[in-house]
Amino acid sequence: MPETETNTRCGFVALIGAPNAGKSTLLNMLVGSKVSIVSRKVQTTRSLVRGIALHGPSQIIFVDTPGIFAPKRRLDRAMVAGAWSGAADADLVGLLVDAKRGVDEEVEAILKKLPDVRQPKILVLNKIDLIPRETLLALAADLNKRLPFEATFMISAMKGDGVQALTSWLAEKMTPGPWLYPEDQISDAPLRVLAAEITREKLFDRLHEELPYQSMVETDSWQQRPDGSARVEQTIFVERESQRKIVLGKGGQTIKAIGAAARREISEIAEAPVHLFLFVKVRENWSDDPERYRNMGLEFES
Image (cartoon, rainbow, N blue to C red; front, side, top):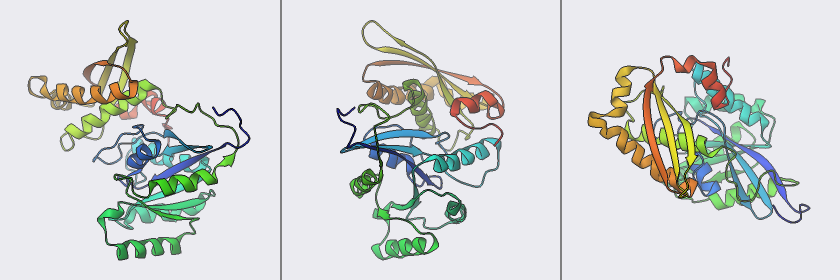
């Protein structure tokens, strides 16, 4: 924490958008470390993930929300409700739009509801390296006609282009006041939660097409060992025995590959060697279990 708080600033910025707009990639780039999982599979961010960035005297607390889409199941409804709740509670809202996809049905639906959110709003066009400049400028003009944004930023979250300008602008907009978190903290999520999310990301990466969306990971134990390493046990929950067999793979090869990839990243965020042990269990209809929703910070009856 800075010695003097008189010049410090702090505030919350919610990142909202359609699934796969690049919110999690942007959050990780803004924070400078992995705090939210990234996957080709849509709607992988289920709960509100907060990443903490420092820029000069400003502490910016970014809230990565689940992608907003047309909900069909209970979990879908809870995720979308969580996203809008995150926007309503923030000091400023950033609408992230995949510039390559442009204004599709999901973005249209967000634009219709966004005026109900009273907080100041900015427009962030992502993946600008994938479309011609003329198309990008036309898209920015169109969106600003639909909604009064305070500012428009054009970025590539993957490459980092334009992210520094976005961070600098947001830092100036934060409210004068003390920081809410220590300066070396990058997320408000416990380490065991981040570790579970990393394993879930590797699960989706490995089994993108084969594994249904309804799967989850929980960290059961995290034990520090005398040599400074950690023994971490996690359980992957699926809804059917056939899915368990897919996760295990022939001779256990798939689960070994998932574990190896997850262990490397968990060791990085833990800044210590990690011995990771994965178990796969069938828990039918876990997505109708109120306790699972509480663990994810979502409302069961959304």
